Amino acid sequence: MHARYFAAAAAAAALAAACASAPTPYAPATGASSYGYSEQKIEADRYAIRFNGNRATAANAAQDYALLRAAEITLRDGYEWFAVVDRAAPDQSTRSSNPNVSVGVGGTSGSFGSGVSTGVGISFGGGGARTVREPAALEVKMGSGPRPDQANVYDAQSVVDTLGRRVALGG
Image 1 (cartoon, rainbow, N blue to C red):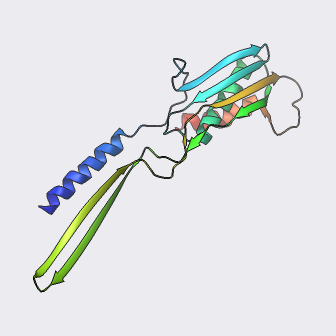
Image 2 (cartoon, rainbow, N blue to C red):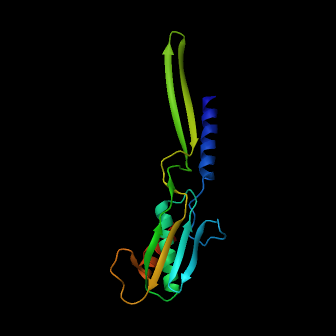
Image 3 (cartoon, rainbow, N blue to C red):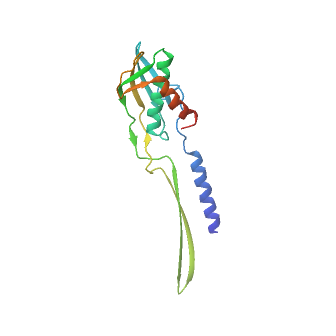
């Protein structure tokens, strides 16, 4: 009897894990509230770039995706480097969309006999993983020629080579 309950609980946990959302892929957003990247041209050499990720998207991934998009736009528009002139990191929560499963086993014995008991607990959310709530946002200014030697200035081709490879590998 206990084995049946344990099997049912395990099946429910597996189903819940399968239903948990996957991180937002690197792709254009299809609407104002959609997940993915978007950009707005501010001036000929200046853009506002956003990456909106779902709760399963890690904050550092959203920031990397915004940087990657900035680098792609920089190269597309014929520039070599870009400077991040303003940055808004994603607002984060400590909720997790991943289900947690726990199993307990106990036993007892006494004058009336002995017994063994098993229990299965399933929780949805409440873990400690940091997840994105608000989009990663950058304002970038692009340029060509000698790159300024500052921490917020990036070589566009290097960013595409490094972050683009990570995105292609799925993370």
